[in-house]
Length: 195
Figure 1: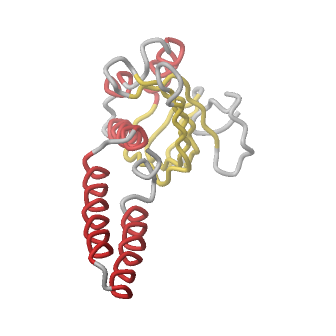
Figure 2: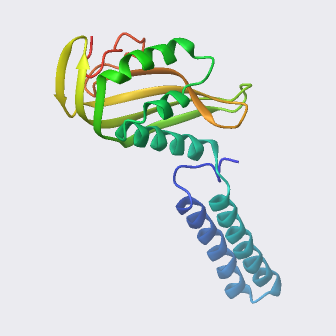
């Protein structure tokens, strides 16, 4: 339901509820009819129930964001096996690439600074999603034999698929520098610099 799976919740839901309840309250004050009072009480209970349901439900978008934060924490802690576990079993080429590249990187910090967008395709079987976000990393990196120590910033685009256990796993990965054109063809696969 779009009203519950919204990046602005619970604020949008609370605002909408306040507007509707205020309208019903004004109708009751204006007319003095019991039906308007009952409608006001019903709307208050309904919207409180919706807000509680929104807080208890974990939407696909929230599950993906939770998975991204977990991956960033594992990178920061240099827990490579946990990062490999976040790759979908059918993405063997990506798994091989990660196993070849990650040992060359020692992270001191890795955090998601902004999630640009997350699009979930609920009609796909299994569900898929594409998410794009900014990452700030710090550490020492050995890329193509060249040592680099610094704090690169990247825009990451992940394609994820929901596994049979309900967890979101990575099936494709591309990245670029923030000022590069929107080229997600996979050409910018070097880290920390671009090709």
